[in-house]
Length: 156
Image (tube, rainbow, N blue to C red; front, top):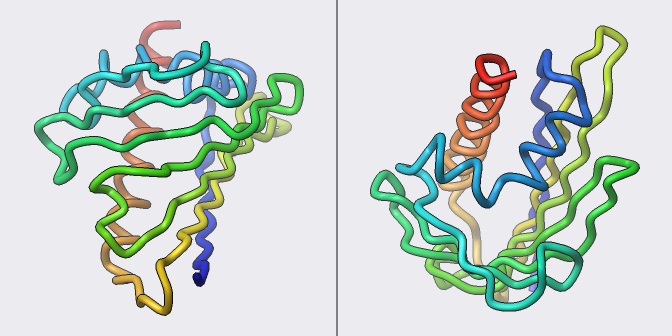
């Protein structure tokens, strides 16, 4: 099994704690509300949202995927970090064992924040990953982050 890592940093004018609450703690209800074309709903299979929680993300009409099983690996509300792994679903495209995401919201001096996201794609065997697919995923993540930011700016 190989691993390919990608990092993305997205600046925001939203305070770090408020962004963490929206992107991590409230995401299961907030994202389907503001971007139903991306995520239609979230179904909890095990747990209450904390470490060990397993849920199924049902993607919306605008997605090429149907669903993904997602496991919460770590969550730290003090340091504004969250780690989760997609362990099943068509988003793995039959070539990935899993995708692990490490999210850290870092406060900036101007009162905003930077969302740092590290994605680690764990491939099956020696499979090569299509760079365009990775790029598409990064762009969709950025669109979702910017939609959350816009929502927070207008619904303070």
